Image (cartoon, rainbow, N blue to C red; front, side):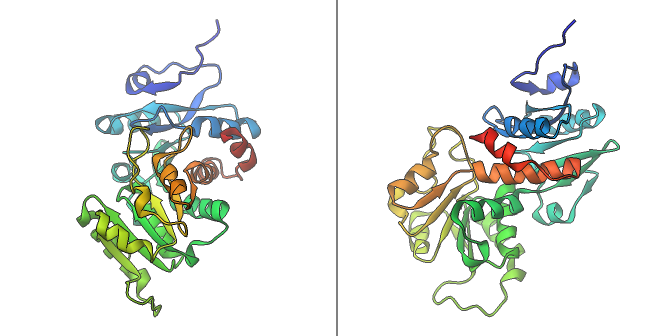
Length: 305
């Protein structure tokens, strides 16, 4: 008798009563929400391209279900999983092993199951750097960057900017203390002799209109690393009236059509990109962690088009 086809979204209850299907599910993405994720179509394209007989699926897992879900992932012979909002920071504390990069970030977005042990990695930072290079043909070291947010993605992006010696880094968050703490963690990267006039190279600012308005003239790239935009009813994290044509705007959020932030950027005459490119590049890096081989990035890119 033919086994069941894959579901669009699985739950913790499904993991607890796991049923194998024709092409076994051995990879997935855990999030809350997760139905919007395009990781399955990208990663399944990679698996087909490499003739690896398994599937990648979505798992709707709430924060209080994460520990149980990870325990089951380990028991069910999964190869690994990705983590998205809101699990990246908490998951870093639930791993048996965490690589140096993920430990420094304090967040995990990729897990490899190795002999039933959970090993945590973070591909967001490198994926972001490759996305910026692809979308805007520029390297982070040449840019003055402002990051909106203080969660796992924001931390990974901020550390990558610091490591690549960006011209300037500004961090803002609804909770100013979170932004200040992240800035202090990165202080060692900004002790060099560069002089940039009236503004410091590293700064945490309140998420307020006046503070953001002042910064715009001293920035090249603004990154939304918050979940704002996952719902089309969300406002843009920064309204169009505060943006300027010289800016590059990168929204880590993606979906059908323009995100609110990308729409605001275009209205202001700025260049803008959504999260598809970062999704692609961090996903390719995750594939390489799981299978220790080069990811078929063109097949993955085609699946997102």
